Every structure is written in C-alpha cells, then in structure tokens.
Image (cartoon, rainbow, N blue to C red; front, side, top):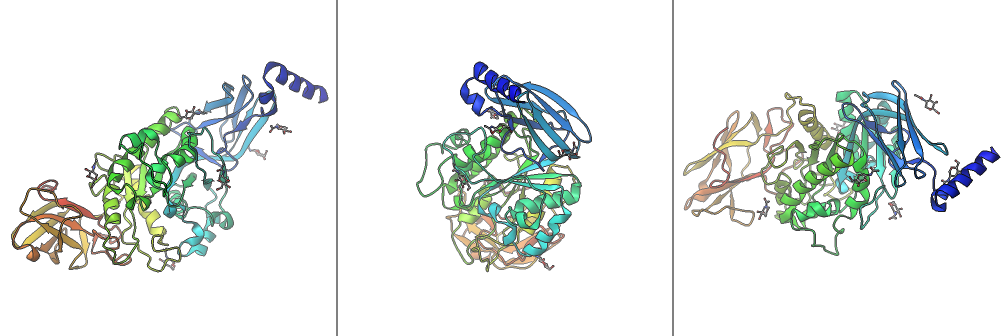
Length: 501
Ligand SMILES: *[C@@H]1O[C@H](CO)[C@@H](O)[C@H](O)[C@H]1NC(C)=O
Ligand SMILES: *[C@@H]1O[C@H](CO)[C@@H](O)[C@H](O)[C@H]1NC(C)=O
Ligand SMILES: *[C@@H]1O[C@H](CO)[C@@H](O)[C@H](O)[C@H]1NC(C)=O
Ligand SMILES: *[C@@H]1O[C@H](CO)[C@@H](O)[C@H](O)[C@H]1NC(C)=O
Ligand SMILES: *[C@@H]1O[C@H](CO)[C@@H](O)[C@H](O)[C@H]1NC(C)=O
Ligand SMILES: *[C@@H]1O[C@H](CO)[C@@H](O)[C@H](O)[C@H]1NC(C)=O
C-alpha cells in the first residue's frame, strides 16, 4: 500500500503539476449526488465532473441495466453521455480512474424539472395552507426527489455551482419543509399521473427581476444589457451562478414563478425580456447537454396572483399580460410549448408572509400540472386553458363576447371595462375605462352593456384588469368545470379584435 501511494504521488508530481496532484481526486460536479434523478429515455443523461488531467475515467452504471463508458480527463474535466435508460432504478454510478473513485448511489431515472423564479417559487412547504398534512404525505413519494441550489451571485458565468443548499434527498417531512412548495407539489402531482421518478431542481431567489436570471445574450435582444439599478439585483448575476452551471444536465423542462419584481422594474420590457429568457434558456440547455435537452423544452409558468386589494396600480395587470407576450394566453406563436397557471383568483388577504405571498400553492401547482400534461405529454383531452374570447362584436348598446369554450358565469358590474374612442388609436392602461356590466350570458357568450359609452364607439374591452380582481376562487368567468379561470385580457377593436372562432 505504501509503495502504491508513493508511486501515485511520484507519478502525480512528475507527470502533472503539483496543483493537480494535490487537488486531483476524481469527483462529480456539485449537483450530481446520491438519491438523484437523471433524465430518462428517450433522452440521454449527461454526467460530468473533475479529475486529474489526462487520466482515463471509467463510468459504470449498475442496476436494472448496466453500462460502461470510457473517457479521458481534459482541461480538468471528464464528461460522458449515457445511452438512454428507461424510467426506474435504483442504480449506482461509479466513476473511477487509476488513482481514485467517486460513486453515486440510489440514482433513479425519470423526468427532471427545473424550478425557477422569485419568492413565490422560493415559498416553502412549511408556509402553505395545510402544511402539516401535505408534509405528512411526503413518505408516500419516495421517488419524487428534490434538490436545491444555494443562493449565490456571480459576475461571470460559472462552470459549477458555488454551493448546494439541499443535496438530493428522499423526501421526509423535516427536509421537505424547507423546499419550494410549488416545485414539490408540481412534482408530486406529475408523479401521481406518470408513476415514475421525478427530479426537482429548485434554483430561485426572492425579490429578483427577470434580468438577474438572463444572460447578456438574452438581455441584448431587448436592449437591456446596459441598464442597471442599484436597488435591484444586477443583470445576469443569478444566471451566472445558479443557472449556467446546470446547463450540462439533461432536463425535461422548467417551471417558473416570477414577475412581481418587474411590476416596478422595466415593466414595459417584460413582454420582450421574459420570452427572450425562455428562448435563451432553451438554446443554452440544448447546447450544454450536447443536444439532449430539447431545444423547445416545455416551459410552464404562473401568471401573477395578487398583491394589494383595492389597488388601482396596473403593474400586476400589465405584467400578467406581458407574461403572455401580450396575447393573453399561452402557448401562442411567440411562446411555443409554454403553459401557464392563471392565479389571479387565488388571493390571500391574511397571509402572514404578506399578501404578495398567497398560501394556496396547491391550486397553482395543480393548474401547472394540467398544462404540463397537455403540452408535454400531448394528453389532448386534458383541459388546461381557461376560456378566452374567439369573437367580439359591438353595437351601439352592447358588446357581445363569444368564448372558445363553454363558460360558467357569475354576474358582475365592473369586471369587464370598455374604452370609448372615435379615433384609430389603441387604448392602453392609461386610457379612460368605464365599467361594462354583464347583462346576460349563454353557454359560451356574454353580453355587456355599453351604456357609459354613448357619445363615441367602443374601441377596446378588457377583463379583470386589476391587481386584485375578485375574491378567492370567485372570479366572474370560469370554464365549464368551474376550475380554470378565464385569464385577463385587453383587446383593441381596430388592432386585435378577434372576429372568428
Ligand atoms: C483524495 O482522496 C483521498 C483518499 O480518499 C483523501 O485522503 C484526500 O484528502 C483527497 N484529496 C482531496 C484533495 O480531496
Ligand atoms: C449500490 O451501492 C450500495 C452501497 O455500496 C450497495 O449496497 C447496493 O447494492 C448497490 N446497488 C446497485 C444497484 O449496484
Ligand atoms: C453561497 O450561498 C450560501 C447560502 O446562501 C452562503 O452561505 C455562502 O456564503 C454563499 N457563498 C458565496 C461565495 O457567495
Ligand atoms: C411591450 O409593451 C410595451 C408597453 O406596453 C409596448 O410599448 C411595446 O411595443 C411592447 N413590445 C413588444 C415586443 O410587444
Ligand atoms: C457546460 O455547458 C457550457 C455551456 O454550453 C459549456 O461552456 C461547458 O463547457 C460545459 N461543461 C461541460 C463540463 O461540459
Ligand atoms: C386544506 O384542507 C382542507 C380540509 O381538508 C380543504 O378543504 C382545503 O381545500 C385545503 N386547502 C388547500 C389549499 O388545499
């Protein structure tokens, strides 16, 4: 043993420099660990790590199937792409060179989802309604495995995470209490439906604007690369340290809950910055994984919930609209393969964490799951979109809205508003809006009174254009089942008025 060690050190110091010799043990990158989930077939999981320069590494997968791959350390890094592995496990993964070995145990194959955003994604399991009941259920989901990235900033793009907050774990109530509620519940509901392992990577930070999570490349698309404000996180600092290191892992998709910070920061640019970030993440994960993560991977997000009751500030309505690239619904031509959970009907006026942090994350996650099933798994019969207008007609006295599906209506005097104008210019948030009471409705139509618009014509209609438009699950328009709320919209007659279904 002594002579082997001597040989080892000797070779190490003769062939390589001393630095490599001291710091040269084989290891996996920070986010590969025991109990982890790797992306299942048909995609191929990527594994990488560090090692002594030029040593040959053998990566061995053992479990229901076995695989063996050889690779050489170059630039201090080794990397392999496994052959596709079907959902299941457990597996062990061993990387060994002649001088050292690194092992991952209890590894499962399934779908890996990245969970990003600001405080409503960070919002912990211990903080939601029915937290103890929800946490007690964790033991029933040993194959839903969370992992959490630590909160770190960097001015430059990093190859690996600075720190891991929670290494991959088999859920227990104690540890799960610290994990993102939306992320966990989404994973749990996906598992209920798919019945194979789900890996959840939480990488989010409270109060952060979309710019902090965007690369310079993405910011350039929107002319934002040079603008910074000392009151808010700097451009790209979380992208650099909390997203860029993950690019080499193969993932299934991402979910995102963010936008509150941008209601007061570059609000007008969010219709560009958010879709640009999605495009950029997709391109970067695709390249980083050597083409394994789909170039159009599914991206789901939560449309902003509520902040201040009775507020007339239209920051939240504007961001909700910008979250859809100003179309009102997703997926749409600008935001393909995206899905959205509408949450404006889930306010929480007594949240001890502030009204900006509603405690009902179950409905948010459930609505995301419906979108994921429809968009990702092509379950075409899963309803996931709330009702949206397919036609709007106006007369002197009324506006008739036809929806794209059967609706369930509660009368309201002011949830719909109209903008009256004789001129050929779009009405925006700054225009003068009047309430348009619901007069009557049919299975998929609503008739509004335009009584307040007598001297000129109705030029635009908007719905639920308020920070806090209704009480809990009590918005005026839902889909047939009463579960999916109609998303808010602002539609101009001369520009975007829909005329056919
Ligand atoms: C490398 O591994 C050996 C044996 O496990 C250990 O004693 C040594 O501290 C490790 N070196 C580094 C730099 O981690
Ligand atoms: C993985 O390693 C553990 C501990 O070394 C061992 O008990 C287990 O049997 C191994 N499992 C597989 C699938 O190789
Ligand atoms: C990284 O984040 C952790 C946890 O938030 C913190 O303790 C640590 O100091 C940070 N490290 C750096 C280098 O910022
Ligand atoms: C984004 O919204 C702003 C403000 O409402 C508008 O001026 C701009 O034209 C929109 N840009 C895009 C790309 O839709
Ligand atoms: C990870 O992906 C980034 C971005 O594509 C790339 O620059 C880097 O070399 C990759 N790292 C490894 C270990 O493959
Ligand atoms: C909390 O539990 C109660 C009683 O089971 C249930 O009625 C309620 O819907 C739950 N709340 C959430 C947000 O899931």
